[in-house]
Length: 94
Image (tube, rainbow, N blue to C red):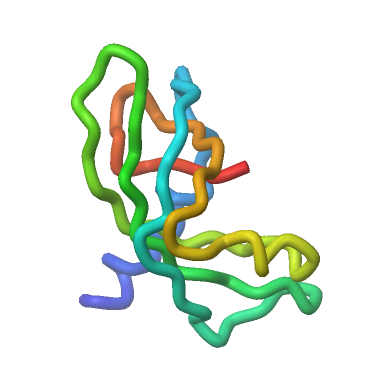
């Protein structure tokens, strides 16, 4: 049954963000997951997310990033984010 749960989560994550909100996030932690896509690494990030008019929050996020910009994702760096207005746990960097 656990496989179906992971499939549902993957399907939800692949859906486009609905009514995205633009904000920024400070990288608190970054780790390579060991997964790559066309030589681009997937990273797991812990982010302090800030959205206009909302309380800041901490989010864990995984995303494949360009191997050419991976070195910019270091603790303390700020990145632009787009957050799903209906589900703030869904976001994307860039």
